[in-house]
Amino acid sequence: MPQPRRLGRIEEIAHALGYQRHAIENLGRVGTRLVYGRDDGPQARRRAELTIARLREGGPLLPAIEPPPPPPPSVPPPAPAQAPPRQRSRPLAAPPPPPPLFPPRPSQPPGPPSAPSNAPTS
Image 1 (cartoon, rainbow, N blue to C red):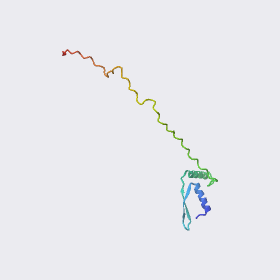
Image 2: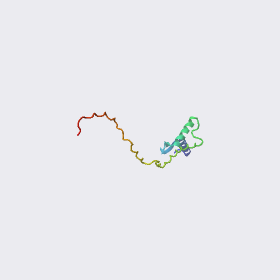
Image 3: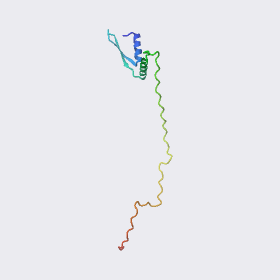
Image 4: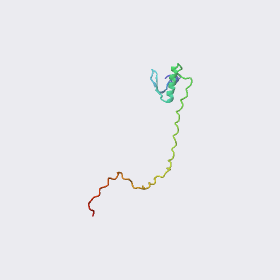
């Protein structure tokens, strides 16, 4: 088993890079295996991004102080309140239109007048 002081340093480095310890395996005389897994939480991802950026700039592996967590996501705007159904301003059924004053015009013009027949009418 690693010494507690050394284990603490390993934990700090893993934490800074976005990992968390899953298990410690005893390998007998050979030693101990520390098993770490990726922490995909938003704070862990942000912490790893900051650590990598700090290393690329030539800074220290571990920060002097822990950076504050990112701000929580903004709250979505409230949904508009449901307005009660409006009352109709006009009556449901309109009165029927008045009857026409003149008879409707035929759709076809009348044909030529028929010739008077000479047949006797009884």
